[in-house]
Image 1: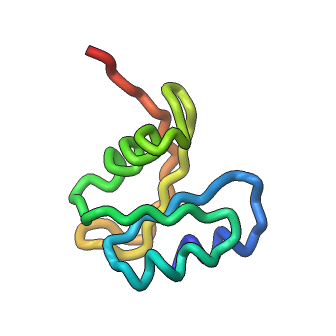
Image 2: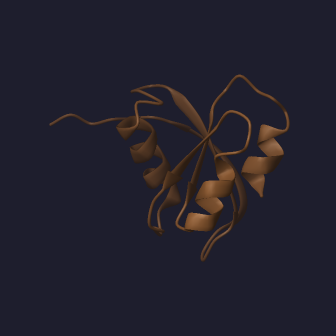
Amino acid sequence: NNALKLSTKFSKVPIIAVTEDKKTYNALALFFNTLPIYSKKTNDIFNQAEQLCTEHKIAKNNDYIIITTGNSDNISNVLKFQQIKTHKA
């Protein structure tokens, strides 16, 4: 579990852990500096992460987020640095 591994480093940077499993969601609440977010799975985890971080006011335009995933349907063991780019109409 990537969120558990990251939380053991006692970083001052918040860890946002997205899951669609209620049992995992409840367990994540016990991890140090970890904000669990319950959300349905999507095929585009990178855009989902950006959207959730802005919706929850964790990150704003031009901030950087780090996205990591273990195993999902189409992606395995990824670590990606992504800049938030909100587009206002």
